[in-house]
Image 1 (cartoon, rainbow, N blue to C red):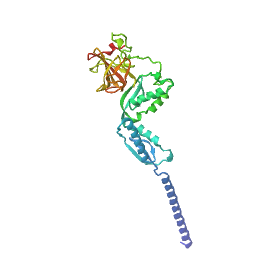
Image 2: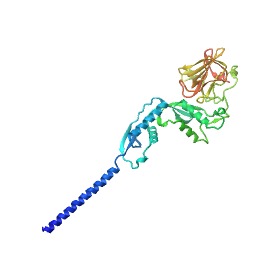
Image 3: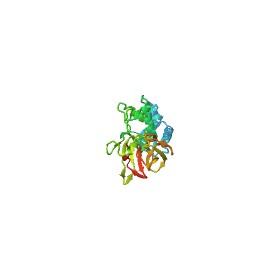
Image 4: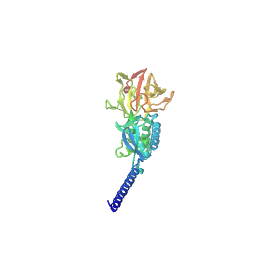
Length: 341
C-alpha cells in the first residue's frame, strides 16, 4: 500500500472513532437526561394492597395518619388500626398536583379496614347516616331544628328517629356536618323535619296498628302516655321470657313524662334497664321508665302527671332509643295498656 493510501486509511479510522465517540456522548446525554427526568420524586401509596394515591414524602402521610387517629379517638376512644400500608418510589411529572393533607385524610378514611363501634341513624326506618354515638345524633337534630325560622320551642320532630349499634369501617362513618349537608341537599323532601302541628300522645302499636284505647279501666283517666312514639314490643311472652312492660320507640332525647302523680323513689343505673326512673303512686301502684339517656328527676321528688322526668335513650340492653315502661301493682307487673289513657 502506498503512503498516500495509508494516510487515507488512518484518516477514515479516526473519523469512525470520532463518530463512535460522538454517538456514545449523545446517547449518554440522552440517557442521563431521561434518567434525570424520570428519577423517583414521590411515593405511591398502597393501603391494604390497593393503590390509592401519591405523596412527596412518607412523613407527610404519617403526619396526617396521626391526625386522623387523634380525631377518631376523640369520637370513639381507643382505636386499633389494622391497615397494611406500603410505599413504592415513583416518578410523577406534575409534582405540584399530588395529594394535599385533606386528600390524604380522605384516602386513609375511605380505604381503611379499621372498624369502630358506631350507630346507624334511621328516620322512619330509612337510613340517614352513621354517626359515632347518641350525642352526635342529638346534635344533628338540634342543628337541623336551628335551621328553621320559626320559634324553636314550638317545633316538634315529625319523624321517628331510631338507631342501631354497629361495628363499621371508619370510612362509612359520617360527621355531624356531613349528615346535615346530606339532609339539606334533599330539602324538597327532607328525611328529617320539624313542625308546629304534631299530634301529641299519638302512640301507635306496630303490631296492632291501632291507637291506644281510652277509658280501659277506672284508673285509665289517671295515667298518661309516658312518651310520644310507637309500641315496638308489647307486654307478655317474648324470646322465651316474659316482657314485663311495653317498649315505646321514640326519638332520641324526646321527653319522658310521669304517667301519674307520685313520688320518685329510684333513679339509678340498673343492669339491663340502664338509666331507670321508678315512681310510687300509692295504693301499691308503681311505674318504671327504663333506658333513659338522661334523668331529670331526683329521689324524693313529687311529680305530676305529664311532668318531664327524663329523656329517651338506649342505655342498658337496648337495640335503639325507646322507653321500657312498666306498671306494677303490689309488686306484680301488669300490662300497661290496661291503664294508659
